[in-house]
Length: 282
Length: 324
Image 1: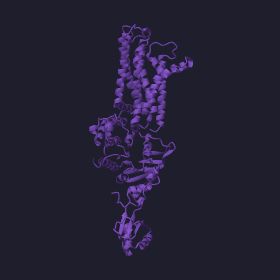
Image 2: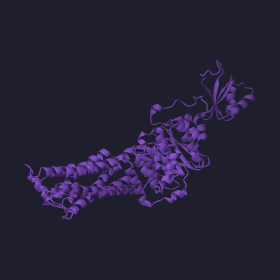
Image 3: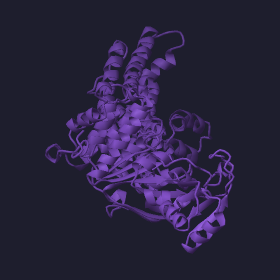
Image 4: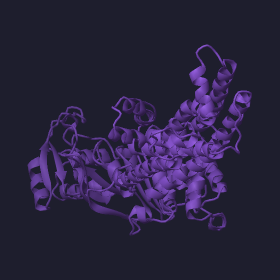
């Protein structure tokens, strides 16, 4: 180090040469963050293995026990909505890995203190959160669609001698694309909860409570119009309609309306998170 | 330049920063001193926009932190609290920061070289020693070649080599006209690093002055005088506008000398010698008592310590030399 030059003086020519535009820059940084920690790779690996694996497993068990002793009801259910069955098995558990990742993407910033570095670099906090949600959403939509189509082909292949489904069937393509979209929006829902709660354990418990426990609890409520509506508009209940081909009787929302309801939950929570992020001390 | 104006921050009913105002000028190292819990870190977080002030404002080059475009190219900060993901590599940590500012990846490698972390650049930072962590923090702070640097307790936990490195770095940055604000509770470290001091206690400003002034102000440059003719010398000193108080003679430094000892303030040692000579007064001892910054600091902050039992011994007892 010489005394005359500043340590690490910046060559301004080099800076100006490599400078992508505003929001893209933040997305690039968020992409660097998300790809450079192991938890991302691990949860996504589990997501793929669990979702496709369970679809394969349940499809195989069903096929192996077709016309089995107590299988009549189940067989009838699979026949009535084979696509819903294929996705139901894998996504039921696979979605939890997405919930965990969505939460971790933001809460680890708080638990490790990186949030301070992030906010020093991007003191306007809303763009930081928006870039994070955008990058996570893009990553999710690509991977979730691959997994959705993968699950569909694996499941339909295994079940093909008992029930024939193809993407050209009525509502099948919508359900398959929708499964990927559902997982993406659910991931963003988890991210929003993580941004609001800021603690990993608390946020994961909350999301899993909303996705798994709440539908069970509200299912116990009396079968009356008010409670049916309450049940129908829960984030997971509404969102998951998109990957079933057949609508059940008394279903209050269409598949796209259901996904829309989950989308509204997510947007509202993200907006609340953005508002609080700006207001709270980091 | 950093300007803090009537800045306050309350957490619940606890006041962390209390109507604090000061200015940090470029071209010198400004030390930010105070006992633990005085509000140093909170003030820095307020300047950096991490916390929102309850009232008042803090600006950097006339702008609030949130208004800065590419803030890392104006302000570099090393916070005391960790701000690195232990599972992420040093290089990726700097890379994402560089990307937010439109800096090229080559800049990241340059910084890793500068702080000597090139070898471990791709290792997870969880395995880093404290010193390596600080080096990474410095690399992050210097990434955008900022004009203003805020360093919160940068030498905490560093080995002597690391302390020297940080100290020289700060001086070098100040010498090329950068604004450097460095907080510490290590007074002697500040004595050799900072040109200017801002001392706070309980969130309030105690003094903002040059380091030399703060030291001088602390114990008032007392002189210890031993003379058999104490009464006559006292009169001369009073006539000169100084003060002379009989001091305890418990030290026995002159081996059984029973002549009384005076502590003189307000008159320099050389002048005391001249006065004594002109009046033919014999002096057995004439010792300037240079206060250390530590003395000055303890005296300044003695009413504002967070914890009562830390109350220091009365200043002036110290007969140590200067702070190097």
